[in-house]
Length: 149
Image (tube, rainbow, N blue to C red; front, top):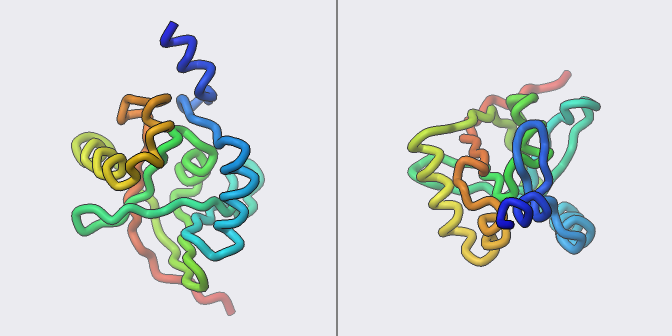
């Protein structure tokens, strides 16, 4: 029965399980966060090649910054894996970066820190996807901004 509940609560992708955003988050919170200049990831779409903006906060942990997907194998995760790089924005600050997906002990420590940092906000994600391996983690490595002439 638990397996059925998990399949209903999560979407399934070829890459792995994910927790789809609820209506209020998708149609109210995320657009408002983008409009107000909150923390935003911009990454090229894996199929269209167009830039896609998604509100995603960073986690600072052990002198590094990370992007953690509480929702599992979301579209931004799959796009970032394909592109290998993206841009973080907060207000008027734009920061290009290279994404390095981490695994092993580093992954587990970062997921534990993310879960502690997010508290009740991550409860739904970890109830649906309790295995830390279902939450991809990317280390943010800055790259020099390219000047377009």
